[in-house]
Each structure stands twice: as C-alpha cells, then as structure tokens.
Image: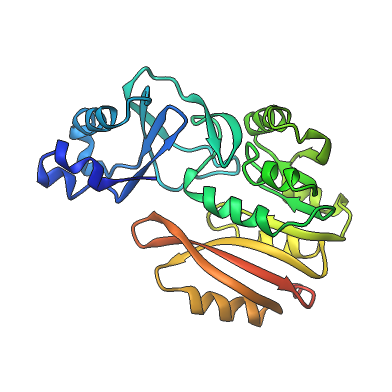
Length: 272
C-alpha cells in the first residue's frame, strides 16, 4: 500500500490534501480511487505516481466498492500503456489477473497471510468468493484440502491458472458457480470457512455456517462504520458464535471500514 504522502512533494498542496490516504500497486499497475472532484487533475496525479514507481506501466482509477455478483470493479485508465492484466507477487505466491474483469485487493495481503498461518495441514477448508485465489493458494500450500467457489468466469479462469502457477492444484477443488446455489450440494463438515463476502452480503454467514462442523472456525469479512468493532462483536455473539478476534482491515470508502472476524461455531445459525 503506497501512501498519499509519497505523492505530496510532486503535487500542489490543494490537490495533495484531497487525495485518498493511499493507493495500491498490483504488479506493474497502480490503482487509485479518486473522488470525482479531482477528475480534472487525473493526468497530474497519474504523472506523480509514475514518477515515484519506475516499475508501474499503467495507472487506473477505480471506484472503491465493486458492485454486482461478479464484483467487477468500475475502472478507468488514466495514464500509461493501458493494459489491465498483470502478474503480482504476494508473500512468495504469484497471481495473474485482469483488474478490469476480476476483483483483487492488495490491501488484504497481510490478512490472507494471517489466515493461512492459522490453518493446519489436513484441514478441510471452504472458500467461497474465491476470486483469482489469493486466499485459496496460501491455505492450500499449508497442506489443507480446499473447496474454492467462484461464479465470475474470468476469475475462475485466472484461479485455475494461479493454482497451477503456484503448484497447489492437487489440493483444491474448484466449483464454478454461485455460492448460494451450490451450497446445498456440499458436504457439511468443513473445519474452517473463509468468507470474503461482497459488500452488503452478510447473508453469506448463515449459508457458510451450516457447512462448518461444530467447534469449527469461520473467518467472516464484513463492512461497517469506523469504531463499530464492539457492536459487531455483540451482534455475532447474539447469533450464537464465539468471537475470538475482530480487527479492522482498512477503509474501503469514506466512513466505511472492512472488518475481519474470527468466529467459532457454537450453535446452529438461527433459521429466518
């Protein structure tokens, strides 16, 4: 994650102060989420990014929260070669992806590494919303057996490629389909589930919870206002989960944060 302060020396103060707090470098592509009020300064801001990162070939402006079932981001090329396909490295693993067709956030890199470090060899792990594989690959590399579910055809293609690229394909079953539709056909006895659910899709938790055995772990990702940690903890305790840990995983839009919750399945999720 590159910081706004790195660009400040190259920009007029009035513009630098209105930039988002940071931007992502994904392979050789820089991704920034600029407010509409700075659109007239696209070229100036992109030039500052290119001057700071000699390996960057393209600068993209991306809306902060992807919409739709495929989580395809709304992007616009603002400088450079114009390519949206790249290969990035994350904690020793390599991922190929097209940022115009799939969802990927480098901001969750340390969180994905943290989760992988909790997995024990031989675990059966469920990962819906698998994307191009950044949660799946390190977990499979730990010796777990992973069921990866993804319904975006472009993401599925890159997922399969990245499993081969990182030599973990033998540990992963890829399910090409919608999680909510295929969940009923899955074996309900997973040791762990990782639920990087899209924005406003907390309904992934009851579906995923039913597939995890009692005492199993669920890593749930949700969104809320800054400082909502205690409120979220009470919410999930009231739903019958043990809350082992809750942490904020950065801002995704002004006033909106992503939270990671490590939950333990104690009781069945209540039916509506």
